[in-house]
Length: 535
Image (cartoon, rainbow, N blue to C red):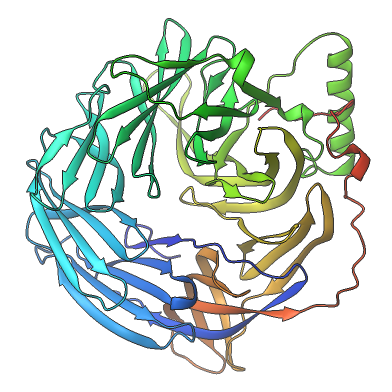
């Protein structure tokens, strides 16, 4: 098993469209050997038809040698275009990265003070620039975004949220106003490149009442609008913004009923982009502007269950509804960025739960003690919701992802669209699992395609941290760690970080509708008898 302390993987996604009917086959393979003497973290950034960028971070926990970045850009045939290295100054540590259309950024920070450095890598030719400065205040950083020539760093100082803007022009920092308050948690930071706006989302709990707030700042850091969504009945857990035009945006996410991270359903609300005076708030009243959609109202949310279990859940919810009772769900969601569609938008979320392992041991006294520690995350299914531009639910669908687990909480399901068809795909045990849907209907049920195609005398004996990314023109990119053995060889298996270009093979256009398909007449109807399982 690969040592998780010395191996890491992150993959960014740039979604491409692919035809609805396709098979997948690995066509070109790139292998990068893994060092046994140092820490290595691999970072893959897809660049559409411009290729792919691979960043390897080298370091040694037990050595005083500086950490080194190795950047390599490949074309769409995985042929090397350029390569460059960067040694990180002593006392600096990599914190977080961000990407824009033309650049990749790495935030570096000294641990003992407020000094920072931001490395900017030009994706075209590998040219690098470093911007150094000081933060206004010490802080633990959890969010890092870049808009033009300003970086926005979000985190905490003395348990209070702080967002700092750092200018690449004059290397100065300043704190964005209105955030440094008790009992507030940073939820998300989004940048709107077209309108040059920064949206900071927070949630807070006051006397058992939860409040979700979106603060919008100008490029220069001026607070221009505050939107409060009171959580008297429903508590918003996450929020993703999709601008419709210069006048309004849609805010979409998941919510709970009790100020917990456990989701009861999804919501959507319209935000008017009229600026409010600084210090005042534009309050959105949930009863007028926000639509809450309980999971039991979705037609296909529970399709990940086996038929008998699903039927029992449906009957259980029907009984509770007849008795005038609500069902409390306890789902955890990983919400993707919103996907614009011709009708409005598509919301994608993956349902997961933490995995724990425990052990008991005797201690002085009576009985035994029991310890639990988290060892990763297990996924159950993904679901999708289509909305129009007015916030009306048009359809929903789901994709079962059984037996899929990950040490880190990553987006596993990839989504590609062409017209009114959507392909959902995810990697598992060296295979691609793919399904084709059309709104609330399943056009082609889930099928598996092997990714373990190597030389004739080789085989994969172990895989870890598998990632699948939609790339360009119907191609996918698969990457991860593998151990590969050679037949009739006494040498130990070699360990590599692999990148596979996965090519689409056209399939038979004649397909049978799935038995799991929702009836077109029922797509927008409220489920009369539906069910769910508490986690």
